[in-house]
Length: 243
Image (tube, rainbow, N blue to C red):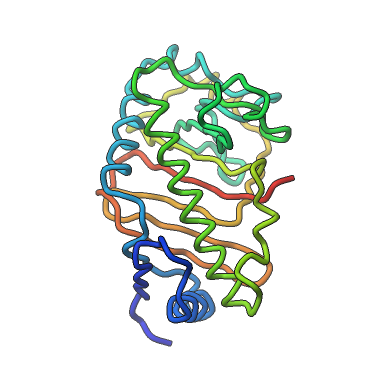
């Protein structure tokens, strides 16, 4: 096995994956389980605008952020009591679901998700637009990569396309890791609860790179793309099939 991280040029990811790209993706997924992609089609300005929106949201006071706190009935929104392996994870998050019809209002039933609830948007000027733009870019990139994986497994490029209809439950997660715990001792004790996590493709932009991960019955792969530098914030877009 080579010790060098595979770097795959997607050529802008506009035209369908070439056979050469398919073979590189399949080989990297089988041998390494992760790889880096360049020329992936998500613009540097799109990434920077999303970072700006992320910083603006988490810079708000706790009371402002909790105006859109997620609930048992609605898993979309802000949360500051996350767990990892049933232990407190000292971070705060904002989850925004895939928006199949961005031209429609957030309260339009066609933008609701039966499993995951509906989006809650902060009252921040200029926040919603870059988030929707980035969600769309990640959706396009993930569907493009899905084609490459299907072909790499010997299937037709659109073999899994029907599983990702307009009502798929993909979402964007914004993470912030503060230097000190945001919760009081009593709040922290009450925060323990069970949690599950599932996805097919995850796109994680960092300050130095963007990472992607795909997991399926046939293969697992991490894919890194070019992005901006690491900070104490993180963004994750996870793609899951329609239910």
